[in-house]
Length: 476
Image 1 (tube, helix red, strand yellow):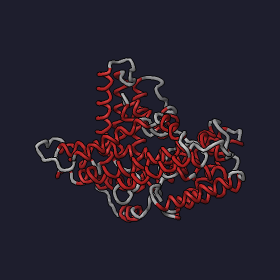
Image 2: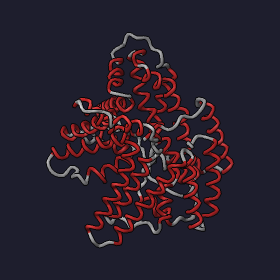
Image 3: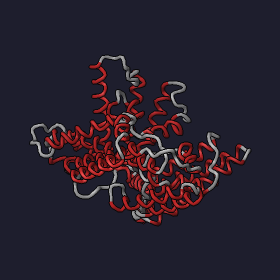
Image 4: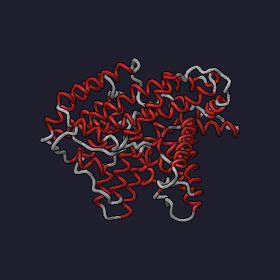
């Protein structure tokens, strides 16, 4: 079940009405939200409901045990067990086949027998990746680690934690909402003074526009065809396919985050923003403060800083950056291209730090600031080429196609360039930049707001291609 569908519209309409009816009865509300979230998650494959339910039980019991124990050894043991369970789950479903393939390749190079690996690969090839496992696993990790650090206390009950972990608006593609931010709201749901309808509606409609009109159009018009056959296109088509993918993945992923935030607002909850105009960044460091903020802050707080962060010698800092982004790349997918994508960003950040280019000076000349943004944009696009590429060979084919300037233009039509430009400029509404728009809409009478939303939705559905593709980050 994905957001821009009739199925989800009916589902959310029911959840919205019942949720507000039960909000003054917290226990009944929690049970309903948990069941609704499990229904939403089980809509893809009901068998994985047991996985997220099991994760709720294991992590909550570990958190309660750590909170009650005064023995440091016991607390560390419980934390290790919880982390092993969480990382083991994601490791089996997401990385087991990749690791088995690498082991089989190593055995082949060493001349060792391969009889053991063939049935293993056959079995692992039938394992289905649970949608959203990377997101709810990281949320579970944030919970047990923060309880261990005594940043927060465990949830009052297993029901509270299960509601937090399975909360459907951001369950399958983020943002990664930490327990310290969302759990208190879920544990003690309160009737707000008012629903921020203008902001919620603007985020949802804006997200639908970015997903249906921009991301889906760019994917069908240029990105998918060119990436599928790079040998059939010239430099201009290839260049705009790379640009188009950068804009597609931004519009696709930020759309999901915006819709999730808007849905949470309609239900009376607030979750942090996940994007803040990333392609306007003046450095790679700044880019990661703006792109997928919930993941970058998670990697910073739970991996980079515990490894030592920027403390100590420069060599250790570069190592910490590289390890953090190698693992960040691996988080996105089990493949060497994802690792290469992470490695590129780790190298970018290390070079910026070594050369002192990490900070974007607001007092710098406007020409220099624009140049920095152009350079960062192209470095990010280069890394996206490996992220989207099916293999290193495929990525190299795309790079070779960038040299074929004599080939005729087939896909980079004026319409494609206009839609790409609109997608790029849609960043200007990220974060709090659209506050004036929300305030203007909120001053309209209710009937006018409803009419405006209906007209906007009609335009979006009319402009969008037939059918709705799954969000890109569902695969992660």
